[in-house]
Image (cartoon, rainbow, N blue to C red; front, side, top):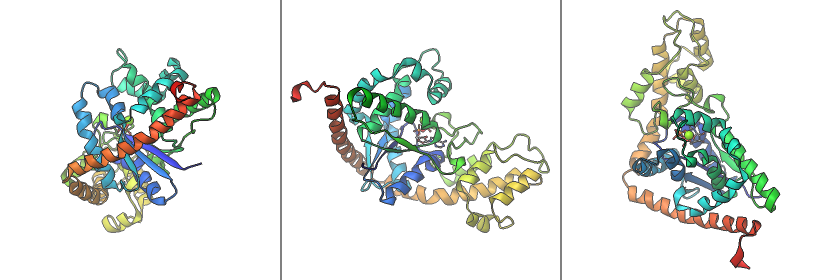
Length: 348
Ligand code: ATP
Ligand code: MG
């Protein structure tokens, strides 16, 4: 069996540090590991339209932003095929056939979609396209024969849904589709990075993000304004590090080297946490360290991004090339699907 990756992001905004630790960093490692036969990275514009249908300009503008974020982080179009979802009409066709294999109640039980419906105030008027996006995501994954999908934790229900569709399809029509598995970040703090406001998830749609493209000043302003432990009022109060986003970000980004360089009084994060938990460590000191760590992490990404942004037509050209290549692969899978379903009438 071939080792194939399919993964992607919705162009609903620029990418943030949650994407970086939750999925992007891993993708770059996997890309450079040489263990994969093919890597497809999809800019999911059709999926972004399911809740941004009234704002196509936003989706369009963010296609280039996401592509720039990818390349700035080390995704290399020579090694990975980056493409735009809506260009691949075959994905819509696959979605249509997969819809028969999923019930309404199954879709309504999806915990991520449930949370998003609430967050977007879709309770009273839920667009069908939005409710069914997990089915279209199953089409995206299976169209490329992907067995590996590197994602953040919120995507697990989508991968489970895709696996169910694959089993059901193969059971009914014969072995055709590959059952994918999710690859999650190794560290717990990266599974679902919280927002700067302390909300459970940093999310483009919630406006609680540090973006990969933020300027040094923006990063500093956001870090210094971050939510911490609301019960840690006086410096002497004992503080909580477990639900405190400043510490969760340090978990995700800081190294012992950072401590040597920026806060040598502590050997490592464990010592800093212990002090905070005991009491006697102020939030400002933690935030100043976090600011240094984030500045150091994001500066090279921002610099590469600025270079790449000088030639936007080259970015579109790369996306066009990737999309044509991806379309051929998806078309081949669609033919197999139609053959399995015995609806390839004119090929006989
Ligand atoms: P939207 O609010 O439009 O849904 P998003 O910020 O959730 O945007 P997506 O494009 O939906 O971003 O997600 C892309 C990938 O990034 C997915 O694999 C998702 O699991 C991962 N991801 C998104 N946010 C986080 C986060 N805060 N922590 C870890 N991984 C994340
Ligand atoms: Mg999302």
